[in-house]
Amino acid sequence: MFSVAHVCEHLGQEVTITHDSDIILNASHVIVPGQGAFKQAMTALKDLHLVDVIHTVMERGTPFLGVCLGFQILFEASTEHGDVQGLDVFPGTCTKIEAPKLTVPHMGWNQCQYNNHLMFEGIKPEDYVYFVHSYCIQATNTEHEIAHTTYGQRFVSAVAKNKVWGTQFHPEKSSAVGQQLLRNFFKLTAL
Image (cartoon, rainbow, N blue to C red; front, side, top):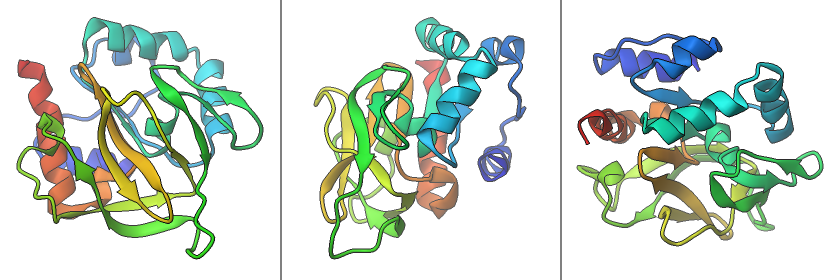
């Protein structure tokens, strides 16, 4: 959370870290970073009465970015710690990475194969981004899949629908490439 805030401030953005629904509903952009487990995240959002707030933000067209766990909860469900319902913005279920010959969690630098989308404007196909995760989305609606990555298996690494974006990787830990992606995200205000 603080890493995301720091990078956004470095890019000239005013940042407020909050779970206050009024502040969230009036924000120009909303970023939900992630660390921890899917079930804990969804329980916290429900306990804080933020599930409807997040859906309202998206319906209003406020630019929204989910990062890592914040990306995963955008999907229908997860098998992490049992079957848990997500925000159901995108179709798909978050499941354990199947990479028998590789270390899980998938931690470190990897590439994304992406399509022509504003999210990756100014980013080169050979650029690397930083991942830290043990669960992934294997498939979603191809219309919304912006990028995929391979680590023992192919998984979805970025999605977008209107002004709702999500990345399995961490832009805030991805150096200049991540900063470019965040710059692209802040451009959504003008669209």
